[in-house]
Length: 226
Ligand SMILES: [Zn+2]
Image (cartoon, rainbow, N blue to C red; front, side, top):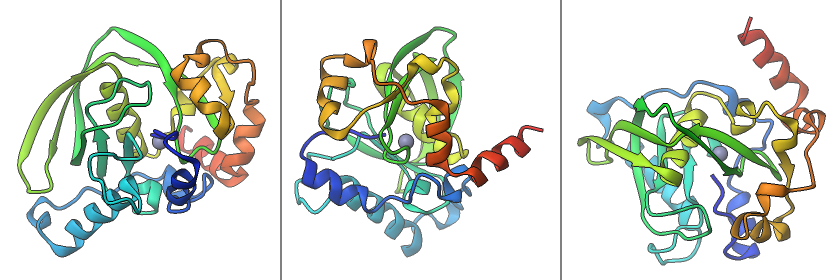
């Protein structure tokens, strides 16, 4: 999920590390990590690569540039995500953690709406309704099994990133075309910080989204549902 604000040069630098929005890896089910091999150089290097995308060239590991990241977004079809567990959805960043083979084990019936954006969906943002509380289980990069409960914006990031592992993007949760928005980089602070998303006039027509994703991926998704 994009925390995309901090500064435009840094944003461009990290955007280059992402696969294009029409890359087929984004609609694939990602493979689980073999927990017996969690300490392997291959898995640890993958985690480091994801962290280096999240922090960019800057050395400061207190300031991630993203609030969430799933391995498929950088072209790797494996079940690893990063989630910042200290954000509230208004631009702050802080505590980015690694979750391997994450699973949602419980969702609240209560849902809430908030905006979402993504480095894998071009300038498309939108308003998504999701359960407000979840429980998850996962493994840390040290191979420790963990269970956690999250709510609010953090719960939303988990759901958004775990969706990526299942080849699903936030746009597919939006049925109402009025809630599908087009937001230029320079408009994003207004969209997010001032809750401009609640009444955003620039819509993204469904056809524009389908062109961004490429015809092939649309056809494939259609076949999957039949
Ligand atoms: Zn995303």
